[in-house]
Amino acid sequence: MATIISELFHVAVSRTVINIIILLITCAVYTYSLLHGFKGISKLANICIYMFFGLIAFVLLFGGETRYIIETGFSSLGRMIQNFVDLSTFTDPLRTSNFPQNWTIYYWAYWMVWCVAAPFFIGSISRGRTVRQTILGGYIFGVGSTLTSFIVLGNYSMGMQVTGKADFIAQYLESGDLYGMIVSIIKTMPGVC
Image 1 (spheres, one colour):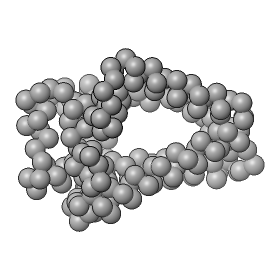
Image 2 (tube, one colour; image 1 turned 90 degrees about the vertical axis):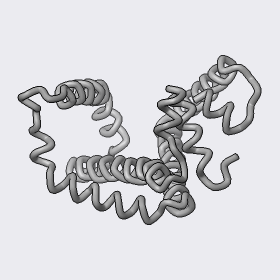
Image 3 (cartoon, rainbow, N blue to C red; image 1 turned 120 degrees about the vertical axis):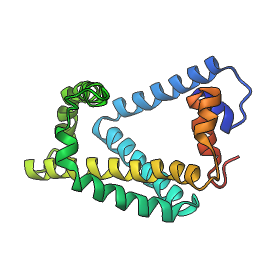
Image 4 (cartoon, helix red, strand yellow; image 1 turned 180 degrees about the vertical axis):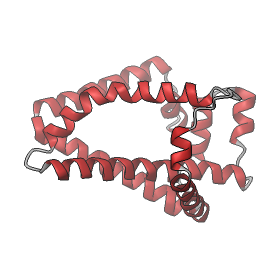
């Protein structure tokens, strides 16, 4: 995060100082939400939702890869639905690659961390709603927002790579700097730097 901020805003301060500033801002936001209770959390959630959909709309409408994003997104979504059972149950029994084993363990472990706290949070912010509304809302908005972000943001950089407008793969292979590549992707958007 410090690399992205220093590159995009041309801040000539050490990464440590930027990290401390980010930490202080995070603490201030957390303190605000804590002091204002559910209203504070609700306000922060609304701000995050508007920022998320604003970013998605900006990349989709002004990024220059709109057609590629939409066409590849629908194609990928269709392929996922078509092959869902096969992809969900594939274990690679001949071990041609260890991808299913490694990815599944990592992915499950990642989500196991969240499954402990998430139900309490969702339950506390869903006061006054039925169980059905809470479950359907969690699935529809959670999965829908995740798919939307993967489709729009992932296909934006893929579109830039495939059309030859940028070569992020070569940049990463040359430098090995993932954060630098993320900054390069952000810099390709209109109005940035």
